Length: 245
Image 1 (cartoon, rainbow, N blue to C red):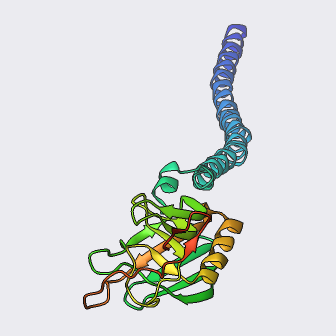
Image 2 (tube, helix red, strand yellow):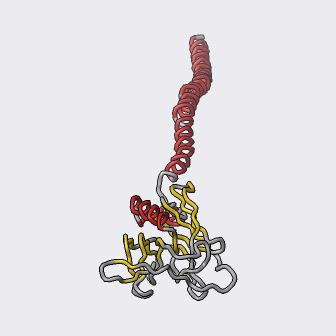
Image 3 (cartoon, one colour):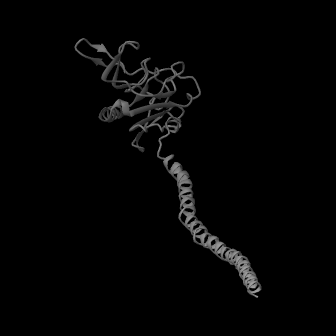
């Protein structure tokens, strides 16, 4: 009886032990299963969203904004800096306007008149005599280079030329004269004025300066054949010389 009771007791203990062994792994696995997902979930929830949110908010917008600002500002800076740089080619290619002379003397051979303009306003219009046939006054635009209160022409029998304003190197000038035929082309090539008008023009050019004076001779000689006229002979000086101008 004792042996059978002992055997039963041993069997009971072995069954209990086996039951405990089977029950413990199942609980361990259940605990591990219940804890492991929670840990992964906690890590994924605590780390992944936070880093993603922090990275997207702190890095992505800032780099995107900086890139867009630097890229959008750099063209504006280049465009605004270009006009400030001087362009020497544009300066050299720009045409320069010719300076308007203070005194403009226009001699018209067809009408045998002289128009004097001062600072763009017509001041005088006088009759003149330009060159006769074969003595035509040369056309062109000139700047006076010499003025003489009284000049004597060696070429034309020492003829006097008061208030002479020379405008060609060949000896053509504007001067006073008492030659007959004023208003027609009867000179030896010079531009003749009355004595009083020549004195007025001489003083005007002298006050402004020859550099600021322009003489323009234009047009064709009047048609027909004309001989140059000579002034009436007038004894001048102690020796009774005759001077013509």
